[in-house]
Image 1 (cartoon, helix red, strand yellow):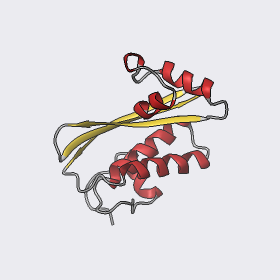
Image 2 (cartoon, rainbow, N blue to C red):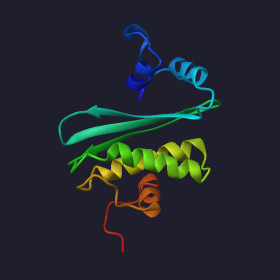
Image 3 (tube, rainbow, N blue to C red):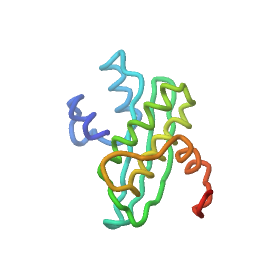
Length: 138
């Protein structure tokens, strides 16, 4: 995330923030760096939160969310699910926007499952992104 990136790049507190300028600094410092991705959490209460996500490359930027979450079961593993969703989409060479949407969807879905790993497949992620009804699907 931006906080960790600021530490790695030794960016002073007053210069920190979510900005493309910070991403540009990272790409300049690390010539082989291809993607920077972050999920941003807004906590309304313990059970009500929202997530947004950002993916920056050397040639583009995509954002997803906010995704509002209520009655959260377990947020442990949400970051791993985000990373896994993003890696999967990148390996499948999906467009930038779709990649960040899948990462965000994976993280959100994980919040509704106990344990530290996501038990959802590509169909679940696609349904979430496509706004499938929350009614029982048979």
